[in-house]
Image 1 (cartoon, rainbow, N blue to C red):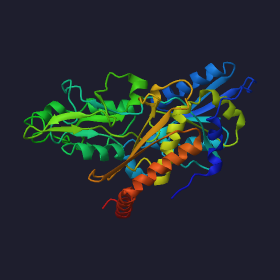
Image 2 (image 1 turned 45 degrees about the vertical axis):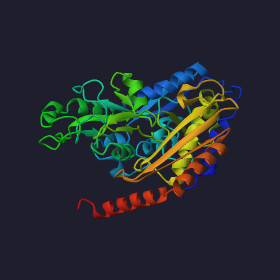
Image 3 (image 1 turned 90 degrees about the horizontal axis):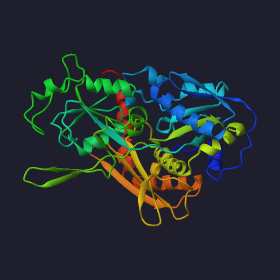
Image 4 (image 1 turned 135 degrees about the vertical axis):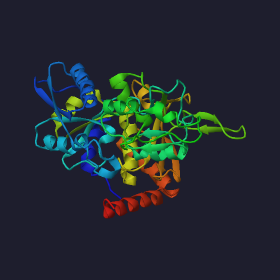
Length: 410
């Protein structure tokens, strides 16, 4: 299994300790790299606002670039397979010292970074959950379980589709690529009225899943809640899909069935700032904007994925929350202030087969104080998943991928 280059995490490990006195005093311009999408620019503005509050005498210049992931808006992510789809071009600029740091959605950052690069900071997490957005013609209160049989849900993530196939086998899942605005447009342009006329009711018969030209007709799409909230607020969110947000349906014979939500992606909702290894000037600049709870939770999540050798094309999901002395549990983004000695991180993980027929889950709760603790926790949950058969599920996924690549378009 892949192991973390110990040198690539030294800076961030040091940054999770108490914030040191500010020593960066000279006026300078800080060059910040980011993707060119609207969401990437919005997230970079969030980081710039934090830096300006901590260092008002500095200037901040944003350099937006189009990455390979931005250029290919058609191919499904799991078919592309590249682990640095959103980062490689920007990392080249960083290593060539054309930018001082890069702002990423942490979920898009590979757990193994190029030599010479490291995660310099992780800021306070946004909402880590996935969210369901429904076609505007559907009535209020529509849920995944109440959609007609054969309704199509759009997602570019095999993690989402694998979990949802397991929970909602009456639905179909199709790839949908593009930035958030493009995906919302594809949803809104779907011809659902025409499709629904061919069905006889909720959960009965099927809907038309494609137009005459093969274009999918989406009843809904799944997106990261954080991106939606940062750009559009909660207006389009029909339902949050965390694992504890359950739907109850009445099955044939009058029995009740519980349908839970799904585990989110590693690092989802958090912003990671990548820097050159050993660049102490930039590391000092970033220290005031690091969020300790988010950092420790995300380091644990990334350690789990790194141990399982997962990435964007592997259905691995997680959930983390902090538990206080009173037993209350809160998602990472809802707690503020200094991390208290009595707080413990609760971490859940899941690995699912691509068709949703196999799944294993594991969880752990412990006190975290530094990156070593977080890495150990992530590896511990990964070991529990492997002991229950996660390695066999992942082995099948990798075997299927090799066969597909070998056959090409056959």
